[in-house]
Structure formats: C-alpha cells, structure tokens
Length: 138
Image (cartoon, rainbow, N blue to C red; front, side, top):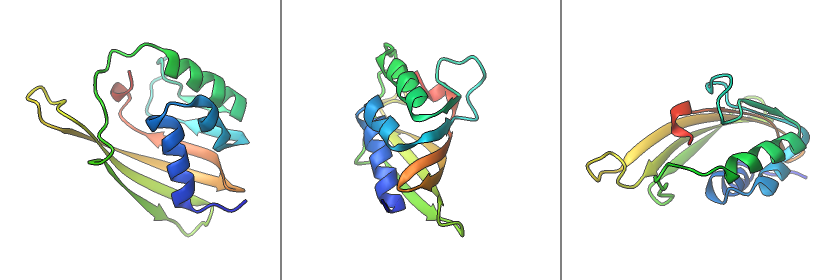
C-alpha cells in the first residue's frame, strides 16, 4: 500500500497528538516499527524507545491514560508544519511549530518547535525519531 509522506504524517498526527488514540497510532507503524524520542532522559515517564506495534500500543495507551497537569491546548489552526523529502524515498522529515493559546503567563500564544524523522515501509512508519524538548510532555 503506497501512501505519500503527507498522508502518513497526517494519519500519525491525527492518531497521536490530536485524538490520543493508541490503537490508531500503533496501526500507523509496521509490526516491527520503532518509536524513539532520543531527547527524553532515561527513566522519564514518557517512553524513550518502543519497539514493535504492540509495545507502541501498550505504552502509548498507558501514557494517554495518565492524568495530565498540563492545561495547554494546542491550536491546530495556528500551528504549522513543513514536510521535507530526502534523496531516500523512504525517509522524510517533518518540521513542526505547534502553537498553544495563551500559555506564556501573559495570555499570549507560545510556539513550540520540533522535528520528526520518518522512515517508512509499505505505507507505514518503520522508524520514527521524535526530537522535542522533554519538558513539554506531561
């Protein structure tokens, strides 16, 4: 099944950050898919490395079920991303600026930037490296 980088990325974002649906998120990965968050310190509550669709499903379901103390709400209309293709047709990069409404203490918006590197196989994510500031995950 062939999907474009745009389709793969949008499916991933909808399943994860937008709806927090661990089943849909896991299904966007290959059976042996790898999710990595290399900047997350060892022992943190957010998973640093998950291998296999079922481990991704279990760990992200547990993460999504945790109570959050973070009152920030992303504004998807103000947020933006750019996808960059590479010389390898199975690799693309997402450059993301997520905007949170009124989060700077003065009622102003706060933008958070991150980068994700996707390696895909058969229309699914085979390896995702998610580079974000670990303090942003509650």
